[in-house]
Amino acid sequence: MEDKKEQNYNLLKKKAFDLGAHLFGVANTEPLKQRFLEIEGTYMDDLPYAISLGFPLSKRILKGIVDHPTKLYFFHYQRMNILIDTVTIKLTNIIQDMGYEALPIPSSQVIDWKEQKAHISHKHVAKEAGLGWIGRNNLLVTKRYGSCLRLGTILTDIPLKADSPLDQDCGLCRRCLNVCPVNAIHESPADFDHIACYEQLKIFQKKHNIRHMICGICVKVCLGEFGKNDKLSQKV
Image (cartoon, rainbow, N blue to C red):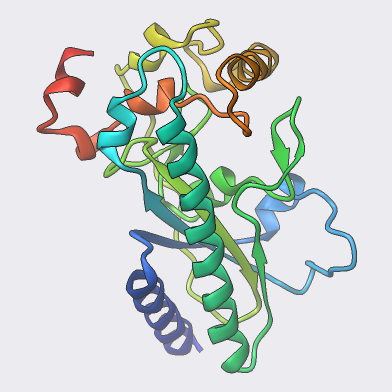
């Protein structure tokens, strides 16, 4: 059975990478149940695995963000969501063709904007799947891309080996604390000010005529190895 789990894991990882994902991990769903919101008409109790996928953002587009989200970043954000949803749907079809069930979760369907909650927390699935950790900026931080990525999730019952969470945090890095326009970011991720962040997103949306609540300022400075040779990242 363990061999079968690993075979399925390796097969789906290759398929995911071929389709455009750059990070792949698997989590057991049981520890994540408190992170799920009700999905009407579905039954998640018999979907014990969550596949987590990571897709890097464009560094060049992020460089254009100074003190507010740009139109180019908004368009990029939208297109990335479309890519992620396309990949998760295609992987879902592959899993179903193998005789199993799969539930692709929308990449950016927010149910509660004020609390910034969706059907499930993609970042907490990714954390449990070993892709990274929750940073001071309240986002997933990865070794390779920092927070400069978008995430996708598929819940499934196909037997898979599960990854382990990383024993890591942001350490001495505090770049995001220095750039947040409303000081929503603090030393501990648990102290992140969701309300201040939400109110600022509303201001950005209205002031810059952007049809989505996005920012990108703290994302821009969290580059990980993605920005190792990036002159801009060294100046921040």
